[in-house]
Image 1 (cartoon, one colour):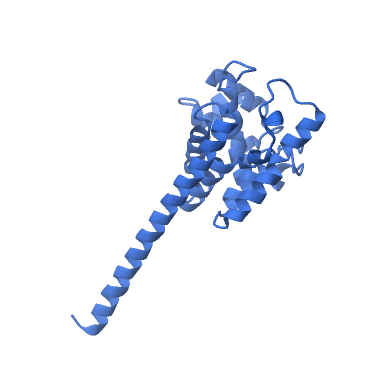
Image 2 (cartoon, rainbow, N blue to C red):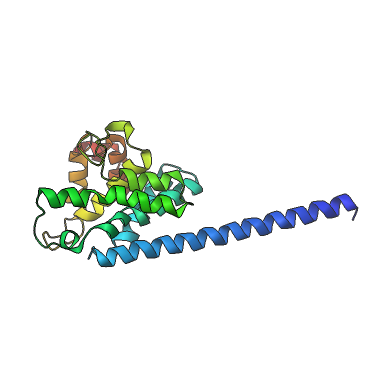
Length: 222
């Protein structure tokens, strides 16, 4: 082998080793972010499995829309951290068994800004992940929070994740409600298309989750 070929082989080996190291780093970061999400889920007394379910559904939606692997991973990372700002919410508000008053709601809504502070400090999160934390309570009609964004002012990742989060909330039992059936939840998603949700993405979710669902079924639900 000539010197040139040897140099090329060494460069290729270093490149492969660097890719492997980057992959290990990415896997470690994902595991750490998932643990943070699960820890918050436990403190929040959230429905068990919520974190993993919304991350899995967000991943399915991204794959359906042919997102790149890196963008899909970033969306999943944002899903793990979407409510991380609730760490800063006092137990008296976060764990209150009854309805919140106006002042308590103001405190609760502050979890988005607190979450952005926390997530930004991590330093390695891609913008798509930060978009999920920032925008997951915004609504298509501008009636959400914290910024009151409307339509495509809301990041794509935020619009996608909101659908996943609400669908899981609807189909999960909570102290104040029974779990909705998947069919009832999909009807509610369809009914809120163009109000709470991006109407195009709402259609994607409905078709994704309804066995054999297609445009005809989407129309029947709307």
